[in-house]
Image (cartoon, rainbow, N blue to C red; front, side):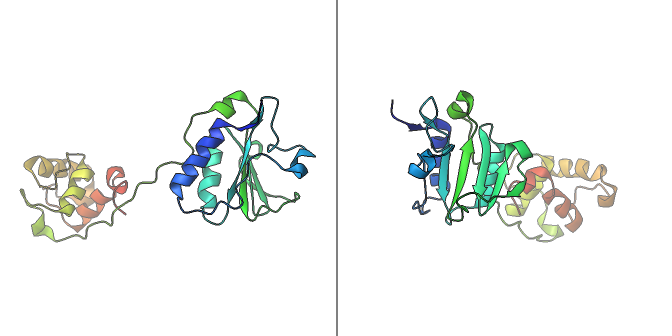
Length: 211
């Protein structure tokens, strides 16, 4: 049976290509050359003919993103890059690496030598949301019922209401509730002043959208 790249690493390669579609691939690597076959290496096919290592060309990708992704993945075993090795067995701490290659032109990613690791369908790279700039506070008079705008969406996300961009009585009532439990925002009158606006923009729901 011919060698094959572990399906989980095929998944990683596909995700890396999608994340960085114009990346160079000159130092990409799968099955090892003769120098690898002369020593123990995850680039050599194992007894299941699975190659459990993949080299990703650098530059062209973000090493921090890839190292963090491998550290979180159930199949990840270690990464070698730029004279450092990051291993599952050492809590993914950066350690000096003095192997035959400094790995400055690529990141070497190895997975665990198990069927579960090879066949894992878990995603590697988390989808990073594109956050919008926070709309500037437009002034107290802009937060009236039936007013519209991006700043109204900040209010609605902050209080957990449906995001329509149109201020409603329900939104104002929710603002009052929001203010009641935050003494620094009293009086709880439903009026969105600069302090209330900043607090609404700091909620978890708003932070996922605005920066």
